[in-house]
Length: 146
Image 1 (cartoon, one colour):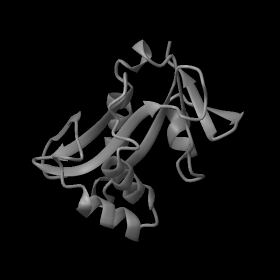
Image 2 (cartoon, helix red, strand yellow):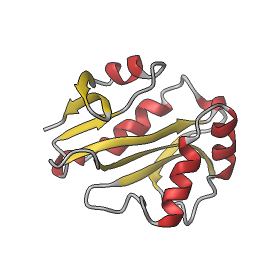
Image 3 (tube, rainbow, N blue to C red):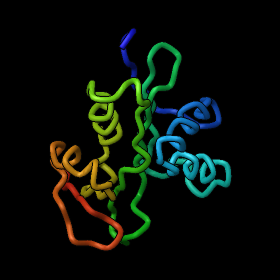
């Protein structure tokens, strides 16, 4: 890592996410392209109460992001971690952990419980962050934060 990593809320209207989207697609993660599509269509802009999209930056370069939305699969006030991605060159140095932490910062005001769907490769990562495996539709893990 060359410089310090900064974390801040982002808007895909103002940030060029294409380099990361291309990398993610080539790496077998099509969800980044879906995130871009949903942003452009207005289906998901991370702009509801308590929602946010956090970017990680090295200088002015976007190197990762993580979103928090209201979970569309349950009726209760539950949040959902979505679209966590960190560039290949910046993995295994704590950026993903920090992104999830930034996304959850203050989330308990709106969302007392957070759910997510983890890939087999990411399950242990989320469990290290305190998420527990659940047997629920559309989720593999959940965490009560309030």
